[in-house]
Image 1 (cartoon, rainbow, N blue to C red):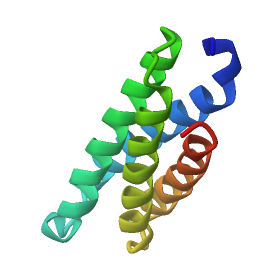
Image 2: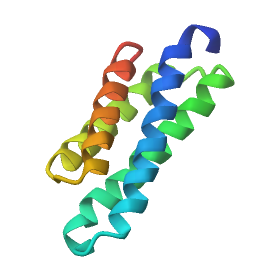
Image 3: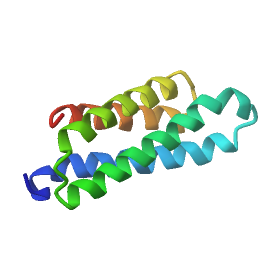
Length: 108
């Protein structure tokens, strides 16, 4: 399957990576950073796997299904963690993560 057929997923992956990177940066500036440790860690994991899958799709990886499955799991974990926090950046990140997870599941 060519990368042209995955344009919507590539868009969701990019949006999720951007949201996670923003959340990561904003969490580092929160007063109680220790409370945000799990969120920070999952933001990094999620941004990394989304960016990797985005690049892999652009070069027509033969591992679309496997990578998308892993990405969906990480996106859901990050979204669930972010949802626990009231910060706007966490809520926006959770929304992007859940949308990306759903998009990943369509090809997993």
